[in-house]
Image (tube, rainbow over all chains, first blue to last red; front, side, top):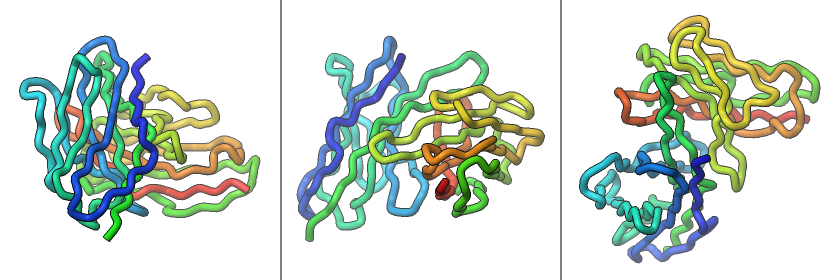
Length: 116
Length: 113
């Protein structure tokens, strides 16, 4: 069965510092990979996705992620965080079903706190 | 927000009572999903739908049922609520072909006392 692991439950970073969130997946084939962000009291918003091709993908809000097949990882990065980046971040993998739609498996999430 | 509305936004109920949560979309998307979110577990899929009257179970479907009698509405029912079903419930729709861009509703906070 597929699974997604986010090893860090909480990360605290200073405003202006760089941020990296880890994501590891377990899946037999090359998966479709996603990062979502959830601000307090809100639903999830897609940051970026990887399907194929260039292993470094750019997303919204200045985020990027790199797919590394050899490490089964899809880590999210941002060079300089802003106070508004404080949120919970979820990595997700999609399993393609026959014709019955695609369902995402989510990691447990990483909560990011930003210090002034 | 892709036209997704969840109702109610908040509900408090007692153990053993039935509860129905509603997800309504305005854009005629085929795929709809119900997730629950709990600390440390991320989001876990309860049930999903790939068309009217076409539904299937997710990873945590026990104690839940769903119905989709028309494209725009996807209902989640807790037949007999238990305290372990206290959670935040999110509805989502999938937009665009095989690529999985999910748009989420704002969530329903359910407390079972």
